[in-house]
Every structure is written in C-alpha cells, then in structure tokens.
Amino acid sequence: MKPARIIVLVIAVAAGGIAALLAGRSEAPPPVPAPVAQLETTDVLIANADIGLGSGVAEKDLRWQTWPAAAAGQNFIRRSERPEAIHELAGAIARSPFSAGEPIRESKLIKAKGSGYMAAILPSGMRAISVEISPETGAGGFILPNDHVDVILSRRDRLAEKATGVEVHTSEVILSNVRVLAIDQTVEEKNGQRVVVGKTATLELMPQQAETLALSRQLGTLSLALRSLADSDKDKPESNEDTGRRGNVNVVRFGITSSAAMK
Image 1: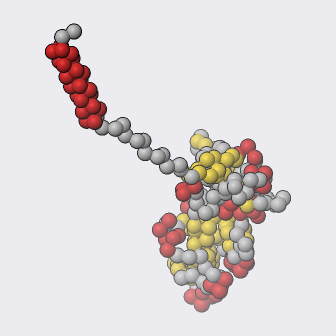
Image 2: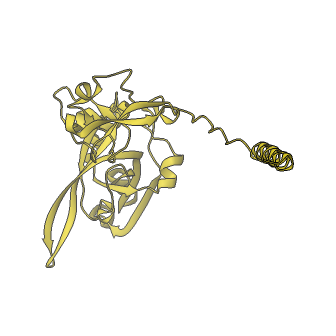
Image 3: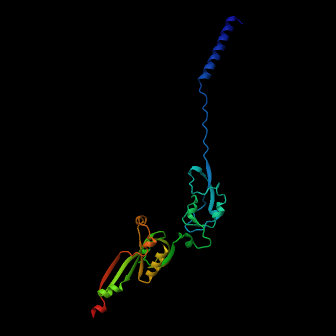
C-alpha cells in the first residue's frame, strides 16, 4: 500500500474517533429518578356498614382500614394501640349513626351493660319522662327525636275566676328548650289515608324538671311547642336552679259570667 493512502486512512480513523468523542460529550446524562417519599400509614377502625342510631354493634359491623397517619385524628381507634378493639366494642350501642367507611369514635358508642337503649343514651344526671301528645298538642306531628321544644301548661285559674266572676284560662311555659328523646308513633287510618301520629313524647329532663312535669299533668293540658334550630342553639336548657321558674303567663279571659257573679 502506498504511503499516501496509509496517511489518508490514519487521518480518517483519527477524525472519526474525535467526532465520536465529541458526540458522546454533547449528550446529557440520563436523569436520576427522584426518591419516592414513603407515606406513613396506620390501621384505623371503621364502620363496615351503616350503623343506625340505637343499633347494637356486632363484630361484623367493624373492620380495620389503612389510613394516612397524618390524617388519623386523636379520637380514632388505631390497631397499633388497641388490636382487640373489634372484640372489645362488640355489643355496644350507637349513640349516633355511623356511615359505612366512617372512622369509629368511642364517644359515639356506649356499653349498655344489659340496660335498654333509652337508659344507655341518657346523659349522666338526666331523666327520661313521657308525656301524652296529639296532633293538636304536638305541633301537628312535626316534632321528631332530637328536636327541642317548650312545654306549655294550659289550665283554668279558679282563684281568678272567684275574683273576677268570669271564666279564666291561663297558659305558661313551664319548661324551656328541652330535648325530645323519642316519639312513640303508630300508623292509623284517617279519612282513608295512612298517617303517622305521635301519641307519646319522651323528653330529656333534669330530676327537678321531671317533678315539675309530673305535677303539671294534674293541673291542666300540656302542649309541646317546636323550637327553631337557631333558637335551640342560642338558648341553653334551664338549670336545676331555674327549674322552678315559671314562664310568662298569658291570661285569656272569656266573656262567660259565672253563676256566682250572676246572683
């Protein structure tokens, strides 16, 4: 081979090597994947199905669910802290309803210990007492459990009748802003239509309020006045010291002269 060709071949190989080296340096290195942050989780006790108010809780109604640890509230039940919680809470009564998938909070459950539902949901120191109602004395059937009502006593005032000689009726609020625990409802036929009529309302009262209500039954007719939600939130129920306080009296005098006045 001629020396000239050998020189040309060496130059071509050198040029190709240099070009390859420059091309390799111009390419950016492949990106390094960012490390994936590991989300800390914990197992939280949730409702496996809907649990209604007053329903007994069975083990099948509860299950563990993986939950972000940062989103698990302090009142959630964690498996790491109470691994036997499902067994421990079986048989409890729901004081508030749970939706399927909702975390279980023990404050919304209560152990009945063989007692009935009403005794289980009553707060400490409170009493449940029932009063008969009708559509006329119970706001037309619109009063439901957990509503708040005023209890109104309507009666004849015999002393005023003796003084005035006319028939006198009075009405007064004897209990204000009390919670309705339950309404005893039955289905009746009325004018060919099925209607729901509450006949008994069970109220949540303090002991002295219960005494006031029991005495008032003997004095006249009791009616329940449904309160607005806004009013129920603003006004607190009467305390034990206020139980004996009488409400504003609305006196209605009918133009009926008694026999004593006619003589």
